Length: 137
Length: 137
DNA sequence: TTATATTATATGCATGTGCATACAAATGGT
DNA sequence: ACCATTTGTATGCACATGCATATAATATAA
Image (cartoon, rainbow over all chains, first blue to last red; front, top):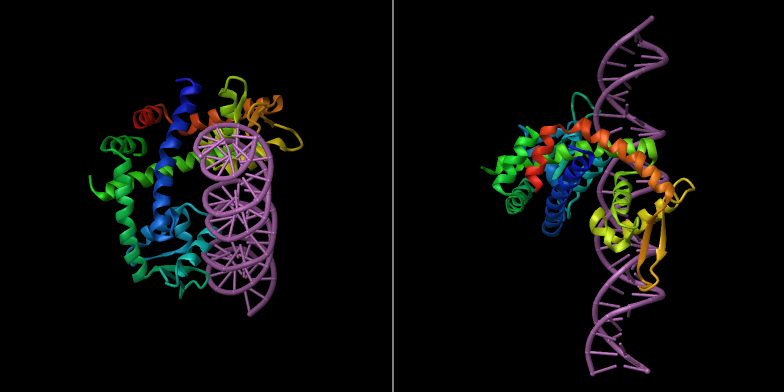
């Protein structure tokens, strides 16, 4: 394998990834005025036991900096006049902030999830999924 | 395949992609004060016959909007007091602008390319490359 | 030819991001 | 107990981005 093949593989992977990402992001913005990062955050809250996570623990999950994540939470607290999530200072460690998924947020998440799944299914074939699994496992 | 598998495959692909991307971007910023988008732009100029391309044609290649690309070119024209690329209005269609890769830009590109290739080789195994090829072909 | 529509690029503006920093709270060493 | 260090979050700032728009040049239609 030469350098050209190597770089071409990378470029093609990027294009494949970005095409799907932008498509999903555009659809979410269009239908919910929310982006893919907002969806990821809510996804990890849903996955969690009590529909809550520490801000710090979300950083590595969502893939944003602390500051960006803090502001993302602020936006979700004030989304079109409704609170999709809420902050609550931890009783024991008063520096720490827990992010709670609210009822309205969970409802919206369920709608978004359907859109996301449709989008993924329409853009990734069964064969693609198998290849991705082989790549990332 | 259920929805969970589908979404997990996507998330894992994103993490795989972003990890490599951020690593390359960080290294380029650190060593050259240039990002991966700047590298892509120069890459396509090098690939072209005469080391030049129309701004418009670069849009789809680099994956930025017209406005972002216009400003990216401006930055490359003024990179640390040197012109890595230059604009030149097309003689026939005076609306169109050709972007030329300058000598200094090509020199820097060659250095960057080595860094990029090393970065890719250290993060993607031979098996990864084969799996990516299967995915994107 | 003249008027209208289209195309290519540049720029004002709003927004999201990371870095550096500020602040508050907890931890550790003396 | 006290002070220094570390940890968790929020915010000022600089900057890259996309959208909407402006401007200039070209193409099209009457």
